[in-house]
Image 1 (tube, rainbow, N blue to C red):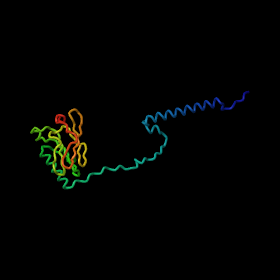
Image 2 (cartoon, rainbow, N blue to C red):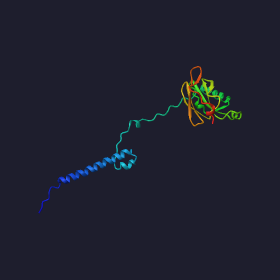
Image 3 (cartoon, rainbow, N blue to C red):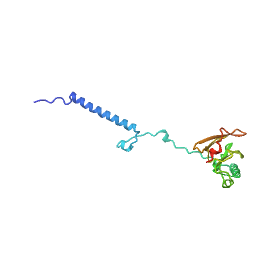
Length: 196
């Protein structure tokens, strides 16, 4: 009768180690594939049965701060804004929004559209920007209205206007108040390019 040899022979040990190595390589490959996919799978499915303890990040601890509300206008500022709107109406245009008139700035602007009465008198439909320093009307951006005109940016002494052109492009022109005159930093596009 033959006696059984040792249970763990050299061949069996190498076979078991080979299988463990294959499982390890397969696990690393699966981990790389899941990581490369950005974990886009169902997180509940990929962590099923596992409890993950996460530490909150510093950003999640912060409560978002609401944007500060501008201080309400004083009676004097409201009166200046109403007077500016009246000047615009006298020019045959209706202000689009009085909120664009920043009374705390030196250079102020109101965007307006040609009124129905003006259009009946031959003024093309469109928009113009009316500039003020303090409560004094300085001038408009151009003699003729523009089909597409928006206020892109305002600072203390500058206003940037965005003109939509007939070619579908947009040109931005920055107007600057130097203390005595208003000057565009680049030319306002010609009327045929601004009127659609």
